[in-house]
Length: 484
Image (cartoon, rainbow, N blue to C red; front, side):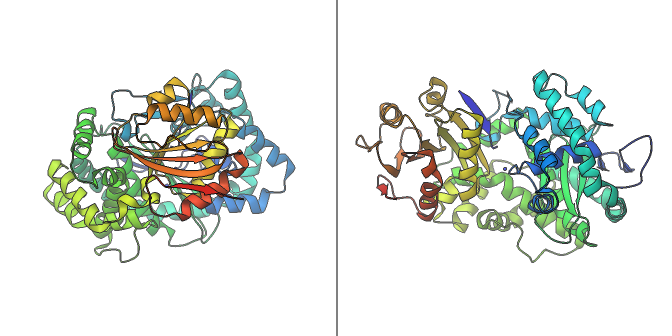
């Protein structure tokens, strides 16, 4: 069985170092690292889900027709990074695993050059994959230098100087936020904001939290872009602090939400990470820095934006009193989610916010196709994929409590449906294996929503997902046969 986690947001040059202007604050560090920029450049050229849309477009516009560049990207794309380290004792819903690529991100942020980077990641990947990664980074460096690095030094220096005055304030907020989350951050470990430029005035940016490192893009041709980066930094900082809560606290929080009798407990829990990061980073921290509340939309997702606004007063009260989130906080958060979104339990897009995906495609290309297609039609916060469906390790995940399960059956249809019939009590026993269909049922024993997309061919995946996304609300036990 193969498992993947989808897992989906400065500069004075020294000839002796590519780390640029580390800040005076002891905890918060702003740095620009060329090795990380190169790794991100390849990731973006590969069109990974976490890549900044504006940089994807910029690369495509300038290098999309360059055969030599595309050959490098093709080699890079063939590298398998999908190796997991699982922390078995941590709650499943709290992302209890990390990947080889996560380690590589952090290593790149600490590397002096590509050769140093190579030494730091020995053993993370198989030797052949390791060699390909280093070779593609060295090969792509001239393209990155000519397109971005060599002509962006003044812009990087500018945003660094703009952000410098906020370093102490961010550190102050970091400590207060850590107190709220109950996270005892080792102050010997810096929180590093690694910035990389996108040579545009407007466009979509992202930030990626990894370990103690925030990989943060910025629009380098926009004079006031630093204002937007402040909110992003605090927002993503919250994700990192939340993820670094102790095992004991994570288990407590998991219990607070999963033992609740509220019909909204599961959904409020699945949105709590983003909801809190938005309420704190885009709401409370913005007010602390600028002296007023940001009246613009805080997040471009109606559930995260609405949940964050509903949590704002509660979060502000706890932060003002120096309180740590507790069971009362969790109960109030659940209630607030239900009041804000009373119909959320029946809306398919929210149920797929956190989802277990099962498929029969076992090749890397097949798995990527399934993940990519689903991501094109639904905004997934967290997703795991198990394959093949009838594998005993996949079957062991059928019974996970309070999870949305999405089965994409694109081959071995009859056998796979028989496997599902044997393991789910509430499933229809007469599903047509030779038809494209969508079917949903409620599995009572695990309190889970189960969706089945049956395809006569993998070529039907996109059209089936399109029909699925248009359904909007769940209709249990209704079989929808799709005709071409």
